[in-house]
Image (cartoon, rainbow, N blue to C red; front, top):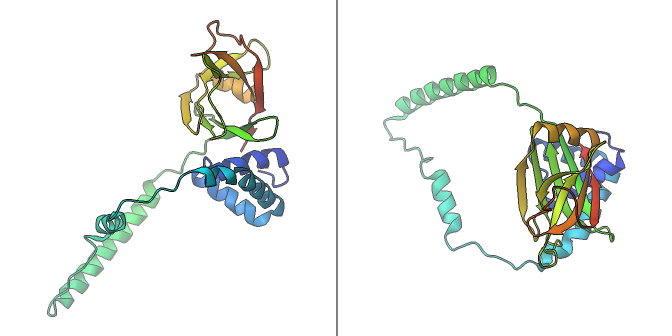
Length: 231
């Protein structure tokens, strides 16, 4: 990733603030933020844009006894009782357990395969006022995830938003009817859809009859477009 790639970093910053950037990708992004003031400004921009959504949500308090329950589950078996005359036996047992633990770590390092790096793509669908509406994540392992932000309201009665892949040549390909109202949807792409998506990286959203287009092609107006950016 290039730290000066503004378009890609802008999309990643939105995904970071929304919370859909996770795992190693989130850790890499946080390291890049330490090195780039421009990247930090992009994160601050999305934080300011999305902050009103946070304050509009009602506060929720955890149930009584939640912390005690967590402590009990984590540490109930952690206390080690050593008798006054059994310290030597405890020391021997500790040395044996330490040796076994070290052997287990070495075995894990030797036999655990390196994690597979999956190429991921992200796009942010924005309104004409540059408000984020959907965050789209696609990966080369056939997964496509769409996160609808709270700003996305259901379409008019009897209508749905439908997501289309725009291949480099040929007709649009329907991917899914989109979620609304702070919900998330994940679908599996076919091999052909993955190939076409990696080639064009272009998506469009149209207004269709409830349940999606009855013809397999867009019948309503195209209301939004976005382009996926490789992470």
